[in-house]
Each structure stands twice: as C-alpha cells, then as structure tokens.
Image (cartoon, rainbow over all chains, first blue to last red; front, side, top):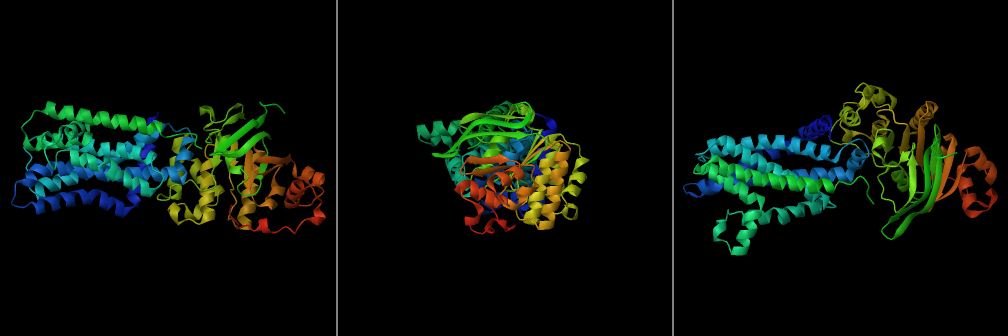
Length: 244
Length: 256
C-alpha cells in the first residue's frame, strides 16, 4: 500500500467524473431535488419532519452504490484493472483510491442535499449539523463499499443494475422508513437491526430530533464503519491478479 | 541456453479454460535482446500464452520463469511491459493524463511522458480524450503505457493491428531499436508478412508451438519463401507448389 498510488488513483477517478458533466450534475443535484420532491409531497403534514432525515440517508447511499459498482465493473471489463494489477499496484491502493474519490464526491453531494433539505425544504435539525454530515458521509461510503463488492459478482452492466434492488431495497424496506422497526414482525426486526442502512436512518433521525447524545450517534457511525470495512475487505479479495 | 540467460523459459505449461485445453503442454525459450514474433491464426492461444508470461493467467500446470523470476512475481511488475490486444486505457481522460496516471503507478519519471508521446507519434492528439482516438491511436497509447519505466521485457499482443503501413514500419523500427538497447520483445501478430522483421519466429497452432526458429532457417528448412507458406508447409507437410496462393492473411486491416 502506497499513499502516492492511492492519491493518483483518486485523482484519476475524479478526473474521469469531471469530464463527464452529465454524470457530475446527476450525482450532485439529483439527491437534493428528490429530497425537495419528498418535502413538497408532504407539504402541510408532519411526515417530512419524520422521514426527511431518512431521505438524506437514502439518496447518497443509492447513488454512490450505482456509480461505484458501474465504474469498477468498467475497469474489470475494459482491461484497465488487469493492466493495473500487472503493475506495482496494490489491491488496497486501488480500492482506497476509489473510496477516497467517491468519499470526496459524497461530501459535496451530501452538503448540497443537507443544505437543500434544511434551507429550502425547511427540515428542522435540532441536533449537531456536523454529526448529520458525518453520518451522511459514512452512508455514502457504505454505498461505495457495497458497490465495489457488487461489481465483483456482476458480469455485465445489466447484472450490476439488478444488484441494486437485491442489496439496497431490503435495507430500505427494513430500515424503519415505512414502519418503525419495533413494529415489524420479530424476524424482520432482527434482520433490520443488523443492516447498516437502518443505523444510518436511526442516526440521522436522532440528529434531526436532537433528543439523544452524541455517543448514540457515534455508536451508529461505528456500526456503519464496520460494514464499510467488511465490504472493502471482501471486495479486495475479489480483485484477482490472475484470472481464467 | 539455460533458464537464467533466457528472458522467458517455459516448461510444461498447461492452461485450461472451462473444459477446453487452450494450451495442452508447451515448452518455450525466449532469448534476451531480440524481437521475437509469435505468429499464428486467431484463437491459437497466443494471447493466453502472453497472459501466462505476464502472470495474469491462471495456469493449471507448468513453470514459467521470466527474467530469472517466477512469472507474476512482485519484483517483475515494473520490469515487464504488457500491452493487451484490446487497448487497456481510460476513455474518459486525455492521452496525456492516461500516461501520467500509469507513470505514477509505475513510479516512472513524469519526464518520460512527453518522450513516449513523441515515440508513439501521439503528439497531435496528446490533449484529446482517449475515446476520440482512432483504433490505431488507441493501440499506440496502450503501447506507450507499456513502454513506461523502460521495461526489460515487452509483451505486445497484436500491436500493429489496424495501423497504416507507414506507421507499422515505424513501429517495427521502434521495436528493433528497443531490442538493440537490450530489451526483449515478444510481439504477436496474425499478419504473417511481419515475420521477416523478427529476429526469431514462434509459430503456433491450436495451442501448440509448431516451430521456433530464425526466419531464415525456417524458410530454408521448409523450402518456402514466405512465413505464410512455411506455416502451411509445417501443417500440411507438403511442398510449396501445392499450396493455395497466400493473401488472405495479408490484409493489414484484418482483426483477430
């Protein structure tokens, strides 16, 4: 593992995104606009105050999952990954380079989404806005890590897109947005309690309500971090220098 | 020639893909400092052999020693330059950025980038996005990346496909220059008339090496005048007179 290679890879990935104006616009603006849409739908009801924080958790996660899984799939299919792995490139250099690049994009994306939610859509955040950012960034990195993992099991762009409903939708359904988790059937509640997105939703809701201490939030962030770490480790095992 | 003096020494290499034996049992010695042509029809196992030498191919048996180390060793990763058949480049960044990125990964000096742009004749498109390049320019960029940090062994899979004759000649001159400087080049092609430019020829068919010789010796041994006919003579064991006229493989624009 070498810092110069991680930084070079992150810079290259950001350079690729920078040249793709449409992707950049979609990446940065769509989450904010969707949060705004949800706020508009629930005008004059207390619903947005309840699910608004969850929306902020959802969109960076989904967008980063898709972007990362397709970007790494392209590396696998274009031969550039094979070329890199035949060079003095560590697997960790590759993955951390991607995580760094998309982590930075996630910060900007989340900044826009949170700003839009708070100042345009009128979401009330009673707690620490800094913590809100921390959770949202952890959440976007989680999307990046799971996207890296998903790309290893997909052989085509068609398949990788299908991984989204498979890996992401259950987390949304069981995360407590539709029905609080404690009201779910016991088995589903137990599953929901170990899924990382649930903890992101809990943490963001807690920050918005401002009714818990920072320790509660940090435990949730730690839980998400453990998932990120696990997904990155497994994802790096799927990068093979030798292939059939 | 013993293993330590050869650039590549292969003993009993076997590669399976699914149930198919792509390379049933292959032995090969590639001497240092020469341009070695790997010729054969598409699908004969040239690319698989090259990937095995670079160390990106899962092999089921055999030993491959490259520059004195087992193929794929960490120590070889900056000593072997590899150019795949499909250009392995990033389409959505410029030519120059592609080279700079790979230079950083290799730990090559940034000053090598303009030098390589010149040697691969990409000066006019240096600031173009790689996706806007023609097929020949793409493969030259891919070749340029393989030249970074002056590798001792260059494994080039069909580097001249789709190039116009003038460029092909200039690339072969570049290869000859590199070999004169001590670099070993293993260059595959399915264009048989490129054979005459190599110091040594390896003819492959259906996963087996049917000849490994200098071009002159090969022609003399088979009593033929072109590599294409030598190839046919080796397969059919007949003399040149009975052979159909060559020509199909000569189209320079043909792809594998």
